[in-house]
Image (cartoon, rainbow, N blue to C red; front, side, top):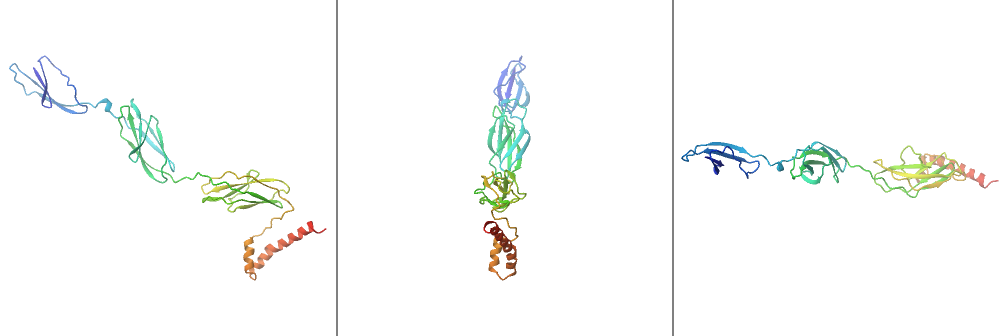
Length: 293
């Protein structure tokens, strides 16, 4: 007959006509040592033949292949991960890792966006393929740094916009908006922007207008990131010949005030000529047209 041993333990004896035997109930992916020895007519056992065999891995325990072509598209607060899925027939989905910890488990989509991240911060992301038997592939990792914070919030809309009439002009004014990153303002006349550069103050003189014609004025705030507010509520004004004309002068009212404090200085004389003389001519002009016959 024949004796069969597994790891030096007799598991069965067969008659001499047997030429094969199936050993059941073994563990998968495990090394075993088998020995087959024969018995002669007086039951004397030969030394036998030994062999070592490793069982195969249970197909239900075989992990899927890893993903390929993992890339990232960062913004200041998000990272979009994209990859190509493996060709395993029993693929069920993917696990998303952030700095080694699972943050999501998704289906067979080949992209995922990680949100609520900090700007200018480096993260390590991983994607793990998962099959229907819950086996995980090896992770594919990628380090990504988020971008600088993007300001996409527009400034507040300017309020209390007025259009004060003047001779051939309108003097637009408005309240200053409270945004800390304010860059300036745009002024719109009848729906068209009329300033070439941002206006830093809260007033702007619109010149070369037609008297006795009604104009619509709106103001828009702009921040340092280029975000713009909605246009303000409309203010309407009509230039009029019977209003004070615009007096061109490089000196402001503050210059005049400062000049009073130093009445006998050279600046006072300059201001007198720059502001006083044009004003005197205007008073004579008004007297001529409104008082004198």
